[in-house]
Structure formats: C-alpha cells, structure tokens
Image (tube, rainbow, N blue to C red):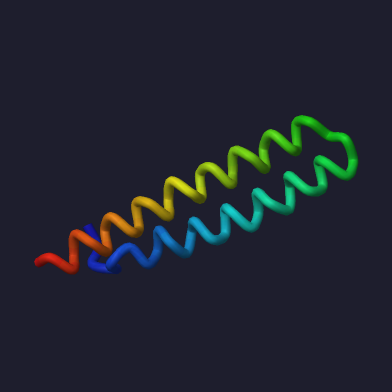
Length: 63
C-alpha cells in the first residue's frame, strides 16, 4: 500500500465525477439514455473513490 494519504483516490474521484457529469449532461441533451447511464455510473464510482480516499486519510492520521 502506498503512503499517499488517499490523495490519488480523491484525484481519481474528481476525474470520474467530472467525466460522469459531462456524459450525463451530453446524454441528457442528446436524449442518449446509454450515455446518461454511463455518466451516472462514473459519478457513483467517483463518490465511492472519494469515500475510500477519506477513509485512507483518517487511517493514516491515526498512526
């Protein structure tokens, strides 16, 4: 396990959330339900990654 204090997970979370928002909005604008679903999945994935990063931060703060 790397000692990045969850930073890389939070960075990935931000990227996935942003990518997901773009896909969701473009899918909404073009009525592409598949693209909207991909966007929602990416946003959910980002939320999970963010929680993992926060958990790593808490874990390393208590060492």
